[in-house]
Amino acid sequence: MTLQEFYTENRNKLFEVTSDAAFDTKLLICHALEMTENTFFMNMHLILTDEQTEALNALIDRRLSGEPLQYILGKWSFMGYDFYVSPDCLIPRQDTETLVEYACREILRHNYTSVLDICTGSGCIAISISKGCGAKITASDLYENTLQMAIKNAQLNNAQVDFMISDIFDSVEGSFDVITANPPYLTDEEMKSIQREMTFEPYHALCGGDDGLFFYKKIAETYREHLNEGGMLLLEVGEQQADKVAALFENAEIIKDLCGKQRVVKVV
Image (tube, rainbow, N blue to C red):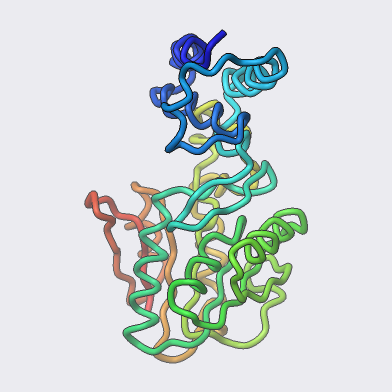
């Protein structure tokens, strides 16, 4: 079988699980054959060996099961940086880039020097801010396995981030100019009907309780103890949650993404 034949056949199969079947098939092939995207179409007449075909079929089967492409590849891009990903952490999403971009602008504009990122997960927010504006970053997460992934990602990107285990602010000492968070925010009801791909991601990184506000309420209780005067709190929110989250805080402002969707709540 040629690479062209394999690509065509399995692209058609993957339409069962994704509308980006061509994209997914290409990346899986490049991953298995250690091929770059730039050279992919130059190798369409390559005759696949039995070993290559077996390896490729195994990846296609994983994708057909609904497993996210990001977990199969083991790495994903966010803010132009590569991040290791696994079922120990939430997959970095483009939606979260709005928070990072806004945080970096405000850090540079106000000459902020210290940042705390809670619920850090893969570390994508903390690491991207560190690379983008050079502020001193502390990042926390409740789960040891998740934090180890974030540490690996900091090493991968040569980012200076101090990591710690903490349930929100429980183990945090001191105060910071900026606090960022992308906490779990899906409601219990929403968790019942999430896409199949999302069932592979850690439940605790997605579910925000009955109303999706559990973690925002916890943050609202004590964030002032850890926010410097003149600083800001930046929270990613679900598209339909911004007003409810903003109502938990004083001096809250809603930031929209480039598509006009309410994406971040800023508190000063």
